[in-house]
Image (cartoon, rainbow, N blue to C red; front, side, top):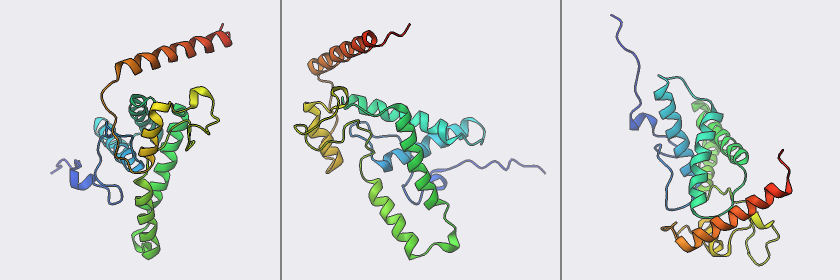
Length: 196
């Protein structure tokens, strides 16, 4: 009797004891490290299911997740670091997570529990991929294309602290202005560098 031994993951089986159940990224606030890790687990589970149980690579998952994270950040008009840097940040944070989740059961003690608690606290903070980390717009010395726009500075500060503000509906006049500025910047870069 050769029965089908393939097990399908249910919510209870895929629920992580450190970050919780896999889920999509929130769309009205910038994601935290915990949100990012939950989405990482969701993408991993979906890809694994599509491939009949074959595990996808960490890099592949990080690429797909970076794309989703960038989409949310773009809605807030806050300049971000490069895609490669985002992928690297995802991979680095995933490695920290793996060190905790794969820690041998018999060695888990009070010290381990403190590490998990510390990780959970850090995971509640913003997964910050902003190109500019300056606390004050007035004191910011970043290049123009990396600076957080004045209208968004209060929002990014809130997301780094209390996280009460939300990404709202599109402001058409501001969107048009930002799109025009982006096109001008792109034309300037093309003129500066001869791509032929």
